[in-house]
Image 1 (cartoon, one colour):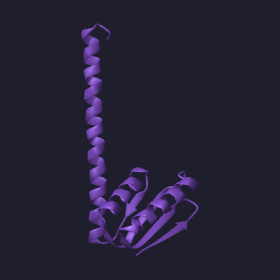
Image 2 (tube, rainbow, N blue to C red):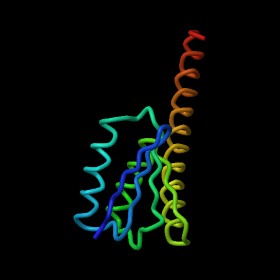
Image 3 (cartoon, rainbow, N blue to C red):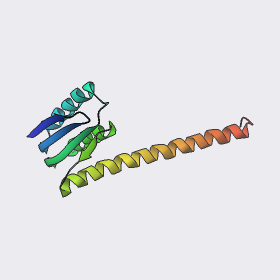
Image 4 (cartoon, helix red, strand yellow):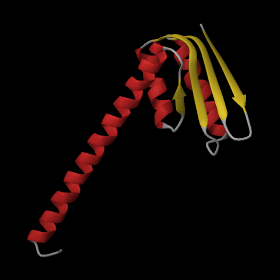
Length: 119
């Protein structure tokens, strides 16, 4: 079971998760997030995982998606902090790989242009 509470303040919205983020509860979080981002995204969103006791692979995927959308993930115990670190690291690695690939492609395009006398 997962309890989802959304607290709204003037400058931020906090999504508080309590319980297990697994099975059908992953879909419930996804639905809540879609509803929430339909209403805002000018305000920062904090997702508080302090009350989460378990996260399955699908739950991590949804948290990763939420992180990509710009939410801050926060937890207070070792398990939650490790899950957050895993998500952040995975997305940071993907960002670096994208930048590396884009930079190599850009360099190859400039080199080809130079060979043709276009630069």
